Image (tube, rainbow, N blue to C red):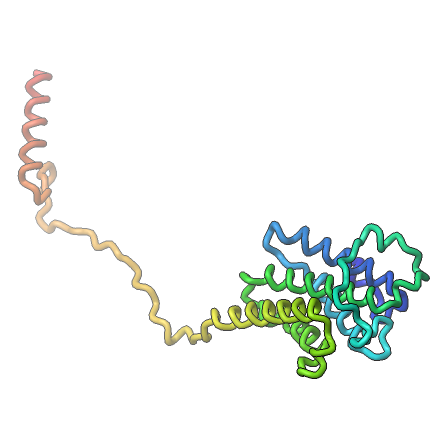
Amino acid sequence: GAALVQIPEGAPEAVTWLRGLFLAKLAMQMCKPAGRLSPEALEYCCRLLMQMVDSNGSLHLDRSSLSAAPRTLSLPFDLSRPSDDEWFSSADFKGMLLACTLDTIKMAANASVDCPAANEVLARARVAVDGIWGHTTRELAKVPETLRCRLEECSVALSTVSTASVSQRRPLLHSSKVKPPTVKTFNPKFENEFAKGRDYDPDRAKVEERQLKKELSREKRA
């Protein structure tokens, strides 16, 4: 998480963003078994999407130059490329980077299912995903079908988790309007004419049984 935060907002080298995405995905996968979310990883993915939308960003993505079916990133191989490799400035690389980023955000959404504040946690991610293409018919038509499906799946996952989080909330109530629970009390019974040695058990059969046992024990001792 600390390494992702230290990546500058406008990192000029695309390989730097790729390394950060590798760390973000690794952090999400490590948190997945515990059902937790890495906020630094989610924030980094949002920053990466913003760089693609920004026309002056180092990762600005031209929709018309995207390939129909970008391959999956091979992080060990791709990270070993030199930083000045022309492949990092190609549309294919940016398309693969976008697909991997959307998958990571979707993973973060699924990890936030049980989070009461999922709507607020995923707010920036929803803005980033919804703003990547504008969600207009003309702009979505320029997006390859593979990326369009991933974009829609990611957007649906974010909306579903956020809506479920809000629907489970209950309005706040003032303490004066809530009926306090009744405290159980114990009222001991007092006998005004208490006599030592007398059995006050209401079950007379048990009283007689105890008296017979006492008499029997006295006879045995005698």
